[in-house]
Structures are given as C-alpha cells and as structure tokens.
Image 1 (cartoon, rainbow, N blue to C red):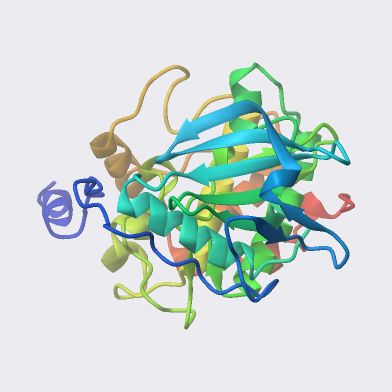
Image 2 (tube, rainbow, N blue to C red):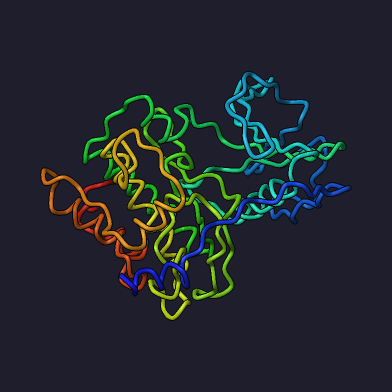
Length: 326
C-alpha cells in the first residue's frame, strides 16, 4: 500500500484546466496551405483541380453542434446542391480554441486518406472568424449512434476497427499523433464509412520518441503512460503513437458494450477515479461470448506497457481484420 501511495504522489498528474482569460488583440495567422498560395475571406480551394468554392457559393442549412468557441453547420452549395459541413471558430473565442483550429487546418492539409475526414477548403473572414469546409457525414458520430441505442455486433465492430486502424496508420506514417481518439471524434455516414476527425489537440512529431505527455485530449481515453510515463513508458520516454492504439481499444469496447468500459452503464466518471483505475486497475475485457480473435485484438490494443502495444501496421495484419475489405 505504501508503494501505491508513493506512486500516486510522485508520478500521477491530472490535466490542468484550460486558461481562457487571455484573448489575442488580433487574429492569429492561418498556417500555410499546400492547396493554394493564398486564403482569404471569399475563397477556399477544394481538393479537386477543377472546382473552387467561395463563401458566397454556400448557404447554411442547420446547426449541427456547438462547442470550443465555435459552431458546426450543415451547408449546401447553391449551384450543385452538394452538402458539406462548415466548422467555424469565432474571432472572440478563447485563444486556445483558435490555436486548435489552426493546428487542425495544418494537419488536415497534410493528410490524404479515405479514412480521415476531407478538408475541402478554408475561409478567413475579415472580422477574424476562421472556418473549415469539410465533407459531410450524414450519420454524425459513433457516439451519437451509441446514445441512440444502436447495437454494434462483432462483425460491425471489426469493420469500424479496420477503417480507424487504416486512418491511424496513415496519420502515424505522416508523424501525426491524434491524441483524442474516441467515439465522438469518429464520423460515420449512411454506408457505415468511418473517418477520423477533430485534430485540435493532435501533434506532429519530429521523432518517434518525442515527449507527447502534455495533458490534452479526453481524460477517459488516455493511456496509462499519458498519466504515468515513468511507470508505463520507457523511463519517461515512450512511443507516442501507442497512445492512439490504447484509445482505439477503449473505443471499440465501448461500441460493443454500449457504454464506457471502465464504468457501469450510466455512471459518470470523474478525473481522479479514472486516473486510478487506468493506472492501477486491469484493462477492461470483453464478455466470454466473443470470438478469440476479437478478444486478442482488444488485448493487443490495451497492453498497459506501451512498448508491448501493437502498432497500427501490425493490427492491420491481425486475424480479427483479415476478412474485412476496405
């Protein structure tokens, strides 16, 4: 018991609340675009070579959601009737939120994968609002499907897992750690195509073992080494990409079980409880009725020692995903 007490005092750290009292007096500049040489208040260049969408071309249909100092709208192209999602962060929002959307723009411009949400362009209004035009996923998020009572069979979970792992392999190959994989950041459409979204707290790595233990992302899905790098990493330095794999494992468990796997259905977590159960408890497991391949796949994701966790490339070769076609 004394050992446990010492470890809690010396190693474990809780995420600090974000500071919101400081606001910039001028808009932060947009990161450079690989799609176009300029970005202004009237035009955003799409990923196609022939189509340019301007702010005047689209009209708002409805609000899809609010949060983090901004709003997401469902919008429509006036001429083609094509539907998109428009994520807007307002000029007077918290500086942290503006930095996050700038980071998201920078990362989306680096990616080109059918398993990562597609950025079609960026608008910056004269008043300082920043907006990202993205493809529209009509079924919302996996979290919204869970809340609606959707049942995810083992076969459906395998299909989702394949797509997310493909997306993670692409991101990790481009030295991008997502750091916030969870059901609410995985978008889905009517064909059950799943795409990784929301890169506001992601990080572009310079080296594989760069420190990546700033406490960003959602506490519930953090890996043990994010809380306690000395114990569950490699002398405080660990493979940062492995944290995405842990979050994937918890997400897949949540889909199959219908609730967050560390807690009984309906119970609301608190930071301290989650930190202790993730670091000192055993990883959650599947019911006895699942196949051995599914159980093995989850175990490969939820190794507490980050060095033993499988990579995205290794997971794509796991028997659980071998019958899935992209």
